Length: 85
Image (cartoon, rainbow, N blue to C red; front, side, top):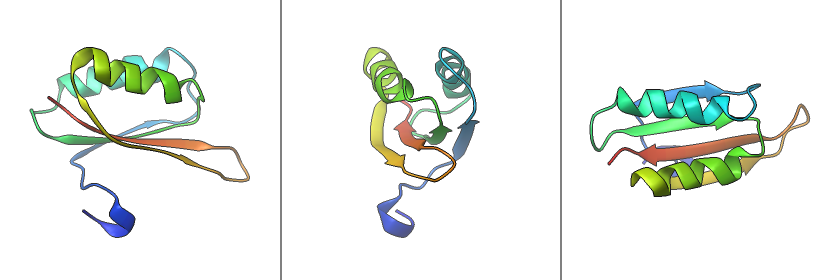
């Protein structure tokens, strides 16, 4: 673990500014490039990711390690840590 109980991660995906279905499509592509057990950090601004990314993980048997919403003046950022199965 790193600062503030943030999981260590090997990959990151910046999906900020993208709307459904783009964040999940990019997530699907990125996960295919990862090895089993590796962790991906995803940052998004689309509120629908709060529903879509957990469903993605559940359907494909990946582990959603954490899901957080960071409140900011410029808009909320949704942060996910996902372990590939």
